[in-house]
Image 1: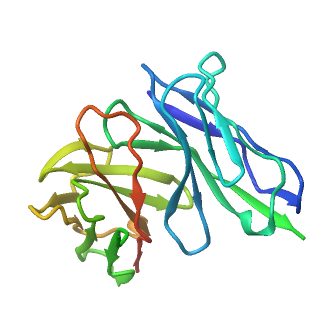
Image 2 (image 1 turned 30 degrees about the vertical axis):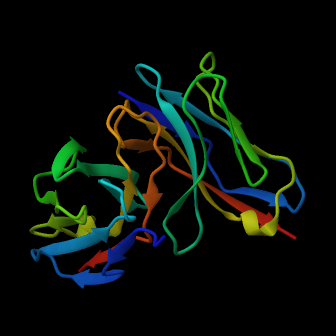
Length: 112
Length: 116
């Protein structure tokens, strides 16, 4: 069945460091791919998305490219801030429904 | 525009009881989905409703049920609560346009349920 695999956390970085969080997926057909972020005590917020191969999603300095050949959607940011500390979830959208399959989440901790 | 709201925010119940959680979607959104978040199992899809019809269902026992009203508000119910039902229950809404791929879903803050 469809699934998402994310790198284990926590990821600990100093401010202004480069961030990569790996995400790979298994799916039939051509899913949509998402990155959501969850701050402490809050729900999920969409960070970025891509709906077809080679699409690049970007928002707030974060980027991810839908790579069909490697079934990946890795999240990157060139220079992280303390305020980016949160849990990041990679998710796969099933067909034309709203059903999302989530990865296990990666906690990012950024220190000054 | 107001975001997705969920009530109550916190709930404590005992084993064997039942519970009803409520979700009000963003105005104009017709699709509501529910997810369970636990430390052990992560985020798992429960069900999706569109125009009062269940459009998709996750792999949860029949104790978990839901419904959607004509104003798109949704409720989920868990009967005969078990300790393992302790979780954060998240609701998400989207416009739900049929046939559209990759619609953005907007999540509420969740209802944290503790079963004792």
